[in-house]
Image (tube, rainbow, N blue to C red; front, side, top):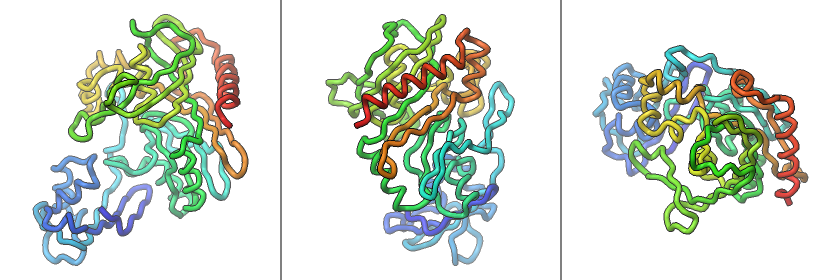
Length: 359
């Protein structure tokens, strides 16, 4: 679907889409669902009835079954309401609306992305997005160069212009970026109690259907899935809890979360790979039970992109974030770990990894 124009403010999203030949004869509600997959069919029908979705130049009242023709321009407006709110144990969470800037120059913005902020607009998440925040701040298009899962916090890079964005994106696509993530896991019987190990299970999932969100792991010699590799470095253990660093060599969807789970280290707060699909769906539908919250312990998966290293303007540049406040607070309340010592240990491990892995 070709986008002809889009406009964001902090409270309103407006986009105009041009119908392509394959869309000719499609119902208006079906056409809109191609873009707004995060909204239900009934929600989209209501927006059409409320006049928030219209075919430009088409007289009369629009209906969900109005026919879209090739080259029609369909404009949709979405007003920010409660659909991006986050809840934990029935209470609305306070989210960080002002991301920390780690580095900025004329070409690049590097932030420590807060949990729940998306990289760019997708599905029903249209306002609490990194690109939207900085587009409103700079009054210009901001380019996403890579992405983090919505619940994952940490280093995220954004481009200020097409030329610089293309150069950095090329580094990501051609495996010239080294990444380090901090995680908290709950070990189970599959964990072999190793201080260091490499996960190389192939990863893949279903392309369609509600369970497409699940990524499955296959043996390294399997014909299924795609090649994936992650190094794991264990920093601290106490009871069933494990703190560690993960260094993904590839960039598959949910890679660290799945590789950790396969090796007996499902991440704390991971509704999908610690809790399972039914629990994930209950949280999504705001129907989570008290026992679900008790198992997760925290509102989001305990994964933080703590550092990246890549070529930038003629030299290898390292961008690093501090431990996120929510995970640090949980560790202070539940573990005996010295946070300052932990951060120094993380810094030393990151420097060692980048020195041996970056050419």
